[in-house]
Length: 101
Ligand SMILES: [Zn+2]
Image (cartoon, rainbow, N blue to C red; front, side, top):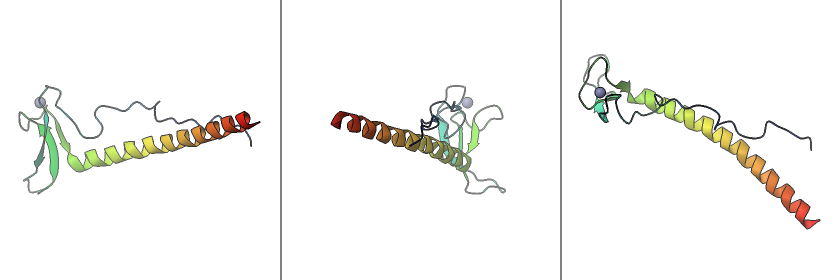
């Protein structure tokens, strides 16, 4: 088997921006609230909003966009983890092989 240096995962190296995914709170410290849009353009669409209410400079983010980001990040993380697991399996198998000799 040829040696490979690309086996170890890279999910830890990526800086996950706090802005991505579901927001927990607004920059002002108020918790994020999940609300349903009643607008004509986006009726029934879920969104995160500052607990102070909708305000231009406070938190506002569509929940479906948050979900897409979360899924993308999780997929990225899992692909890195599966690489790490493959590496660990190889390491363990190689370790056992050495011990049995
Ligand atoms: Zn706010």
